[in-house]
Image (cartoon, rainbow, N blue to C red; front, side):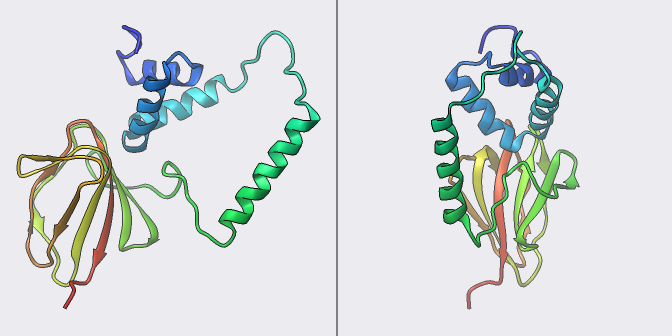
Amino acid sequence: MTKGLRDTIEDRAIAYVLGALSPEERAAAARERLYNSALDEGIGFAERLFAGLQSGGSAPAPATRDWARIERALGEEQRALDGKHVQPCVDGDWRLHGPRVEFKPLWCDDAILIRCDPGAVEEPHDQPDGLDEHIVVVAGDLVVGGRSFGVGDYIRVPAGTIHSRMSTQAGCLLFTAYVAPAV
């Protein structure tokens, strides 16, 4: 990222929305937006703020062949996703779990996404009897017992055990499922 544009989340959000980032920087910001709620909110605000900006004249009307291509793509998407539940990560009912930690249920209360802002910490606690906790790191980093876990890493916290202290340096997005232990 250009020196000076990364000073604040607001600066990064504006650079993202205005297209001032390289393709690599934009991809990194899009990934970080998934687990950094402050950056996500900043980008959303900047998108709303700059939505009314236009170039000097009105935008040219898309060619007829462009509309046909758009209609075909929308039809293909509708057929592929018909009957399926789809929810973008940033949408949904994000709820506060603790300082700098939010979660949202997916298809049920036992399958959730957890979004942790940079520096978030969850202190040790008892894992409830009857439910194992399965955690997959979707984005960012998760630190448990001094070990850093990254994208795709998996942790199981058995029912009835102590859930160790967890933290994140850069922020993270976790998929968590609570499942009765296998017998």
